[in-house]
Length: 517
Image (cartoon, rainbow, N blue to C red):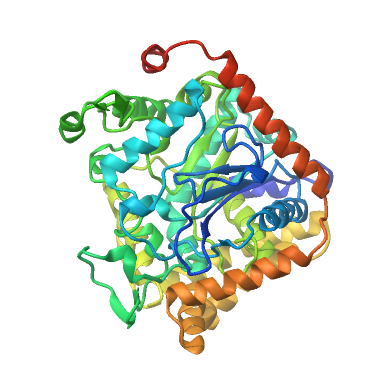
């Protein structure tokens, strides 16, 4: 089946190929000049974090999230992302936009301010959800930043692909099934992305104060994993003991939404003991394993754009999968915008091949093996002799990675022949070079750069963040003029004010209706 799907795709012509649709959501902390997390409110010049289309906050008031529109090329997407960065950097004053995934210096949970979204019911819901994350997991893990890459294929492709496969489903159901086909293979291969793009091998000592860990001392203020690729995605990063029992099923849309919905409606004793209020203040939305779908941590998600007050599950069930969100990407600290063109082009190639390769359902035993492979590469992936479990056999990581990359060559050649140039072969070669010269692996580059500078994690990241800031402040805008960003900020503040004026329903009643829907 794998070969037949590839053969069908290779029978398409250049005029049949509509390319990729893509966007990125890039997080990053605001930090003061001493390398400590900013205690200031979200800058008013950046507009409303609730309603601005391009600039919001994630967990913390200090954790910015920059969002591009959907673009049809890597260049357009990166131009957009860079313009948003140029605008943001001009509004930060003496503060710095942190360039790494693992955070700056912290002083416990109290130093991480929870994001505020105003007095509207939707704004309060977003804040209470974050309060829930704090009482469930603590705030420290919520200070970590990453880049989320969103990819879809145009309906023109899906119509041709459905015809090539002689499929008779509705287009909506066909697309959802095919996106889950892609996701299953993504789960089988996601360890490769942690090897090639993991860039968080070290962290500031304040992040693990009073926490048991097995990291090695880099210098008095920094710990690191000598073979680690991404501490962000390991046990010290995003983790959740309650979620380990969920068994969220990525085999198809119906099982995915059903198992997620079950988690939102399954009480968890530890959270029941906390309750939803402390006095008159809400501290979590509910006492279930998950408050809402977004609380579930995963390296990839099927997504559908939601309407205001619509839940992600409802959007998926009513309108199907619209795009794939890749969530496991560390920020690239060597890039002023956290991602690079060759990385994005490789992700496009990698994800398309996940769609075109054979992708049987994943059973419980395979699911466990995939999770183990992923965790092993996160913790020890710079050791290319690390043994991965593949098809019942143990294969050295370097050998498995080279085999996967070699399998992408025909597809890269075909896409380049359709689009002209050598975009995909170049992106592929950039990854192969990392295996040929392991010092080019991002996690190795970070460790070496810190060693060469004589600085620990906080001071090295602070220095490179200041370099990025200076460069971006000096650059001209490429796509969106400064005045347009200023207008967007003002419009978002007006929209939030209008929402707050129109909201007359008590929050208690709003929350009851939200939970019942």
